[in-house]
Image (cartoon, rainbow, N blue to C red; front, side, top):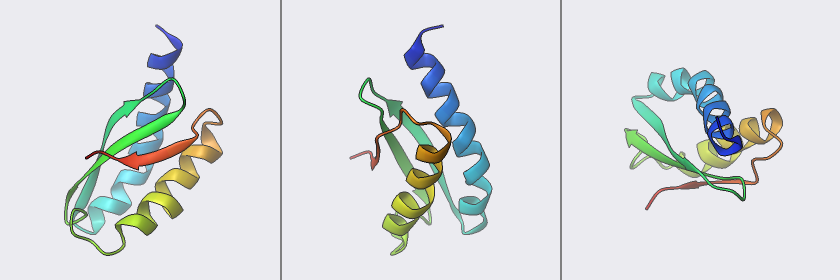
Length: 80
């Protein structure tokens, strides 16, 4: 397994910890990619798509937790 695959797996595992809170509000988050620079790309689903709290959830919740648990994560962004 490559280092990038290991990082993708680690990010996916952390997202699984966060996912129940997001699903409780009728939304969901899907991991799209993790690049060599530590940029994580996610896709929001369901109620999260038009949620006014999406940025707060992304930056204050998902990005913070990923950076705390996986030091190689540098940024989290939403897929276009």
